[in-house]
Image (cartoon, helix red, strand yellow):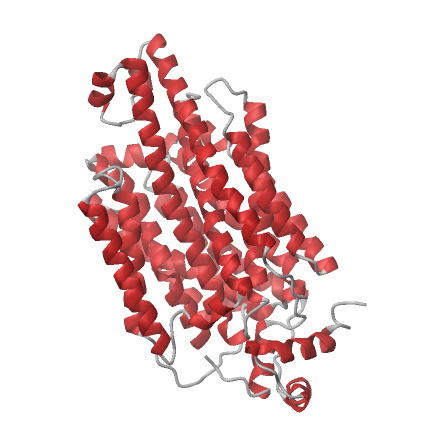
Length: 548
């Protein structure tokens, strides 16, 4: 029996479970026959609409990673300090992570098409300012604008997909988005390295390169994306939005600075952590009483949503942490150039692309999805354990296999976690649930990069002291040495240090990835709905389900 043939049966099943409340059969009948459900988009129309979304999502995510190999040149040209080095990356990530919940809530209230175009315009403005920046201060401000725009695209792309496409058919499309996310995340360092190494382009093109693609995405979306807008009286919970943003930003700033600018166990840590927790506690209090909360607390009553959020945090740690520190390993432990280091990331891209696409197609064909979550978590953990065996002498072939395994695991997990959560919430909360997963995945990535970075820095310092003595380790002050100035015997030791420290980093990360296995095992598999988000919304309204 085809997906279309099953639609009416699935409608009835969905209607009975909406918002966890029983619905009378008469309401179900009204939902099916009496409501004005929006016309289902054809496959061709969906692909056309997705082209603009994928283009916008690609360039917004690319902005987070493309500067990684260009940072040394940027800092040198603008006369920035070592502390600025980290903040050029983290300010964009902070802005993106902190604003995702607000974008998700706005998507439940206003035109999704307009919101996506606004997010792309913000990204374009930030990119142009960054490309023409005269100093690091302006650059940091521009990165905030880029981050806000990127946060909008990251959240809204999946929300729009859920509005257009039924969960039962979402697999074959979400696999493409998973591939775009992975390719943009991992290919960023490669593109950035090529631009920096090309004399007639330079690092400013790391920011300019996204502008024409963003403009093209805006035009494509205007022509191809046609979604109904639910017009109703709304009241944005701005206080809740402020408290969520302030609380998350406080904790992210702490995780970025701790271990580098002050000790993990210090009064500064206590101030940041207590301040962040108090702000988030106040946010929960405000959200529980707000008529239009930014993150409806009711979504956490769903075991599926809660567990997918936990797993998303862990996937964020594996994806962001793994790619950031592998890039450093390629350049320091293996002595590769920025461009070659980027090319060495291709096996992970291929694994992610392959697994996300195949898993999506199989989910669409058979309607089963939990097995791919469990398999993905297991394979991701195996990839982390394999990378825990690397050193400065590991062959490129063996390293590529290890990275391929990690990419395959993340590819099966990432987008299918979103699919599971979207299938489990009322249509009126699709935006909030999707943005919550995106938010916590980014949060996990930010904290993972910071925490694992601190582990790496401490391990490098202790190995320096072991190999060269405490005085030499103190004189180095934790900075990455300039390999081109070192004699061969010292260079060999430095490479060994960074190779061993990176392996230890993945050894620490493996138990974190293992927790994702436990989380997804306890997710209950629910049949995928054959209705799109807009059709489900029409059904809920006809059946008398209150809007949240």
